[in-house]
Image 1 (cartoon, rainbow, N blue to C red):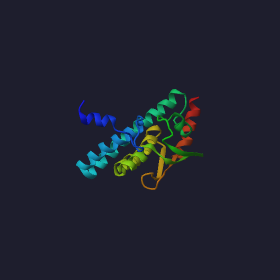
Image 2 (cartoon, rainbow, N blue to C red):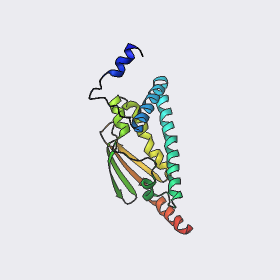
Image 3 (cartoon, one colour):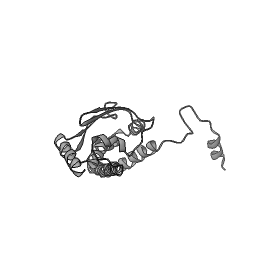
Image 4 (tube, rainbow, N blue to C red):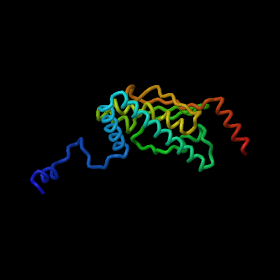
Length: 182
């Protein structure tokens, strides 16, 4: 071991550093930001569009898998089963409130592992590309009649506000179809 390596190994940890493993959310947020930055730096607006398209297709795939998870449980891919079969667990790195309304789920996040990391790293410009696309894409993949209004972003307003809405006429048709199958 060289003198430099020994010094690095023996240095003390200041109070801002931790020797604990970082969360997978932190690692994925950093990965997304750096890959997105490289694409945007090289291709400009076309790069931003390509990143958004990648997030959209990824999100729709996740949504289809959430619908599959509901189906395996014998449940329809309706509004009631969306969060029950969601594919990503929540840790204390997320703080949010969920309110259920007829044909709508409203969520407000005041803490998000992804957004908080992008802010910490000064990578909001790249993180927002994910935020703009992911939830509407997941919802569409889950059920084409499920839409998301994402009117506030943690990276801009300091919190993320979502309204997950099932189209009324399509919901009624789906309920009728589900009853007819039984």
